[in-house]
Length: 358
Image (cartoon, rainbow, N blue to C red; front, side, top):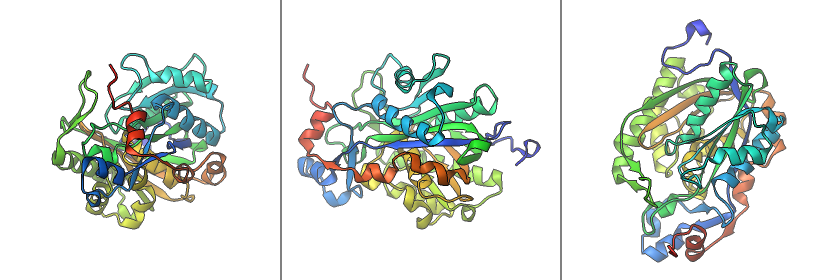
């Protein structure tokens, strides 16, 4: 699509951009759904999530972001000092006042001439950072920008979120399209004021609107964003080999895919929530990293995130030849998932600080 042919609704920078590097990170600890069911006497068969990833005592959004970013830099083949932005999307930053981005930038070795910032839009905070990175690089203000979606498990003890609220995420380096392993052909954002999930400043755990989080929250926004992107780009589900949707549970993305004309085969490789849980700001992005680990040159990928509050970002990607040489330069998403140490519910409570000691 040329600049003169651009839809007024699509987000397409004047200078073509894409992902030149990506990297995932998933903690090794796993809490089985059966452990949650045993403690709270839930029906274990009621959850389609087998287990979830849990951050260790020495892990948080900052440490996990550093690991994912190092993988992205390895695949990109650039020095951290070349980054002009380090932006982290999360709803579980370690500090209420103090940015995560500055710590990550310094740990990576980015120069002091870099923009850092923390993004907040619930589960789409990571893709929100990617949209901003597209603008920075696409305008020529900077050559490379790092956008991260990362979260730790949150959920009140006994809440259904204990089955699904996992830890992990992914990092993406946006750069010129001629260096990209996946070109961003177009993006589109759809938002409304829909309060389906929230946490006020002094609250420890988030609140959610139960079934309200499906309709009119998740499905309305996912469907509107993806459908508009498809329409405005003149494409349909059959034009894409893969599709990745935000995955709070397995059923929501499967239904969303079906409504848009995608089949189970197109979404299965990016559907990771049964084994690592919902990584919130990293959910769509870690699904995309798993897909990029197996995608071939010429494959097209549709990615659609969702963030409560509420909104969705949709992206149309085209994989390039560069993917073949670069993806082997860092651990795959599957390798992180396979690296597994099971824990019990008591260890989970200790790791996640669920017992108030003062």
